[in-house]
Image 1: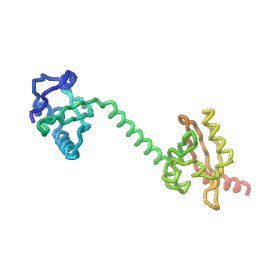
Image 2: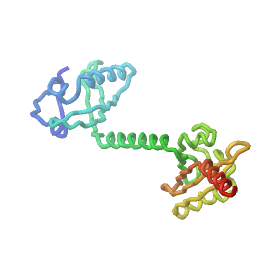
Image 3: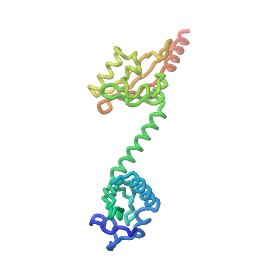
Image 4: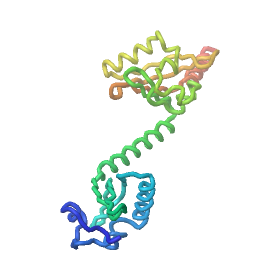
Length: 231
């Protein structure tokens, strides 16, 4: 209940102020660790001790004297005397860079997801073995399948009509050469209908990116226009 009774030079530098023999809790709570965080420490620690854990891992923030927020992963080891826990030894590791990178990665994924779902084109990302890594909602609607039915599976399971077609060979060619390729094609859609699509293939890492635009209505309009001109 006293506070911190022993610390190394690294902690003293982090603390950034005069360090007495004992650093009372009120000297760093809530100025460096919030009261809420400190109470959470107590809850996590009590729960771990009830389960008989000998090491307790905590992830928490620490505010430096100049207002910067750092993240630490701290391992607590209980110290017992006479069968009772009298203190804890703590070893803390600065994980700020990792936490910030994870946050940036989450943000990037959220932005990618927003882009995929707001796009009017069909967008598909394939691994180098042509497994489906990602497909937006527009693509799933076109295929008439759910995300669980296609992710991680071969593109041929999502679109069996591809097998043996020149279009499938073009997928492999673009991954091998790295040269983008654009073309129009007619693909089966329902049992008794076909759709005209414009495809753009491009290499993404070792895999393949596909952007497809349904141009069926545009083609229909062009046919009707030509017919009207002939008449």
